[in-house]
Image (cartoon, rainbow, N blue to C red; front, side, top):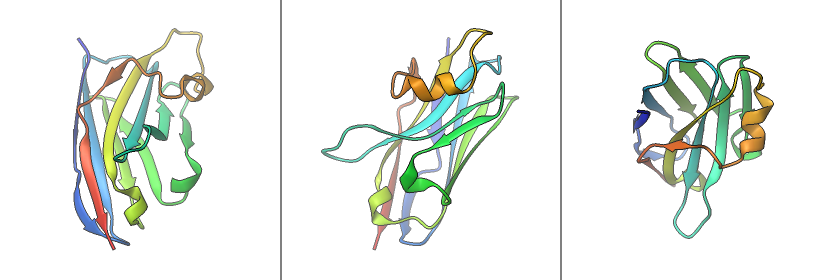
Length: 130
């Protein structure tokens, strides 16, 4: 049973930093796409960053490049998102997601998944004030 639990959200002023964490229980293999997504009120869910531990592949959406860093620990399987230089446009509910892959897949598969990950957390709110 895969379970994802996010933490670390909160309220911060523009220019500040936050670190989100997601503990992924039930995932042992490194062949798992893991990612952070966000959804602001009235907007569609947006992919923020993705990582594939098996080959180190990472992807960032353009708006967060240079400001956010995705990383992970293997045991226990924990996903992180270090966010800096936050702006009000980053305000959203942030979700952790995971998707198990076959042994033949590479990290680029995680990119092609888009928002089609199989497991999702409940989300953690990030609010950035100007």
